[in-house]
Length: 88
Image (cartoon, rainbow, N blue to C red):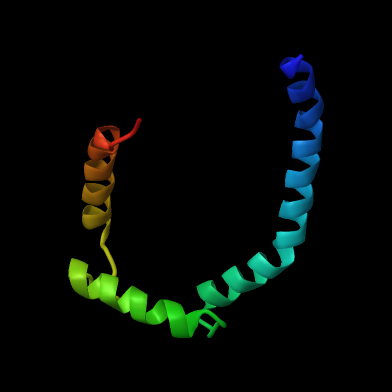
């Protein structure tokens, strides 16, 4: 009997997911556009101090850009370390 209820609830879950995603498209899209364009957002007063702290702790220079060699090295290191992540 539990299998029948699971089968009936799946279409409902899919519909709920689609409604939530559709409802969030416009506000999240607008927020992301403002972030990528460098415009101020309503979350800046909260997130900027956290961002600066993370940059300071990790030694990242916010204005610096990576050249292709640095990017390639970071990509390769991440590719090798990714399987080592702790997972259940």
